[in-house]
Amino acid sequence: MTKILVIEDEELIRETLVQLLKAHNFQVIAAQNGQMGVAAALREIPDLILCDVQMPELNGYEVLQTLRQNDRTSIIPFIFLTAQSAKAEFRRGMELGADDYLTKPFTKEELLGAIASILSKRKTITQPLTEALHQVEARLNDLVNDSANTHTISPEKLNLEIELRHALANNELEVYYQPQVGIDLGKIIGAEALVRWNHPEKGRISPAEFIPLAEETGLIIAIGEWVLLKACTQAVKWINLGFPNLRISVNLSARQLSDSQLLQRVMAILNTTGLKPANLELEVTESAVMENVSLAAATLNHLKSLGIRIALDDFGTGYASFGYLKQFPFDSLKIDRCFVSNVVTDAHNKAITTAVIQLGHDLNLTVIAEGVETDTELAFLRQHHCNIMQGYLFSPAQPAAEFEKFLVTGKCLPVKSVKSLTSVSSRIIPCPPLLEGEKSLPFRLKSGFDYKNSSF
Image 1 (spheres, rainbow, N blue to C red):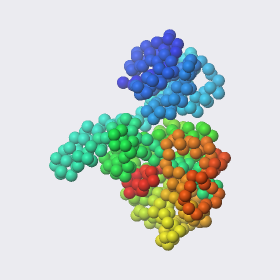
Image 2: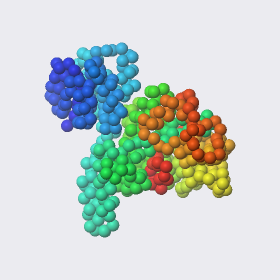
Image 3: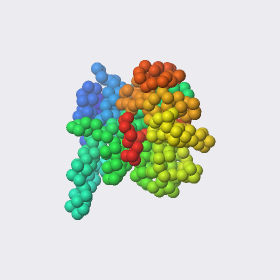
């Protein structure tokens, strides 16, 4: 049964809404002010919230802002109830992340119609996750049977899968953001979204440990979709803060590429979050596209037709030949950190990195270097006109709040690099937070370690 939270300080209106919704088979929770509403939302995690705008102490805007900052409630659909009809009021609420407005007085049909519309959109996104969680018992039975027959399923692996499904259902996963910086001007042009698992007892679990398991079990589809939804939602918030050119990059696994519902799911997320396709880049690895070249090409071309950018990650480390580049609608090439590392002193890395940059430019692609950790690496990339960098020289992946500080303060690369990595933070200087229309972005799993072999 769909659970709806009603936050309304006027008792008559609150009781009327409760009776109406219960009559239409909704489970209803009522709160008589903003503070009680926030507490109820965090406690009950409703499927939808109806909230009055004008309330004493904590008004509707403050309620929404508080809930959007909490991972457990950040994507709950939210409808404002208001007697105000000014466009400025509507704009304020939508910028904070409201899904709809109902102007008092409204009819029963208007209320139920708004609820049905929003729940329908969210169902398109959350259904795969719900199905994945409901399938856990059947999946565990299969694994136990397989273990009894083949003796190849370790208790540790079985337990990790159980905990991973629990983590997805209980908001233990989190998205971090690593800045991507235009090398010429040194300004942040976007972020790569990186998944993290903070286990309540074991602490941080490496993506290298849980992503291969997610791929094997198929749970990667639900995790990947959750990350895409979270990253797009966050990107819209930053764009509304005054960074319209910001692009968010999200990785697609091999499993997702072969999923027949991928296109519909991506479109639903863009529609629900309001993110423009041009602000999203989807990233794939060579190994992922080579699993089924024709299917991958068709899928990526469909995504490209929506206006989404496509990046090829780990170029040169997989199985693709140059000939395959013509079959895929790539906008960007990413140089793997194994080539960027020691690029000045290692002759092989120097030759490969130089060749990839030149190839990318010849094909009119944006070239992104990842894993940049020293000033000499940055200087080499500048000398050879690489477009974008990311890496510890600028910043490791950060929680959303920390990345937002980079945007607001205008953190950027220094104009000139110096010899050593000592006191890097003192050489990362603030500059006006103006985002340039650089050429691209991505999403991957790493936090200073090399998780590329995790295939996500």
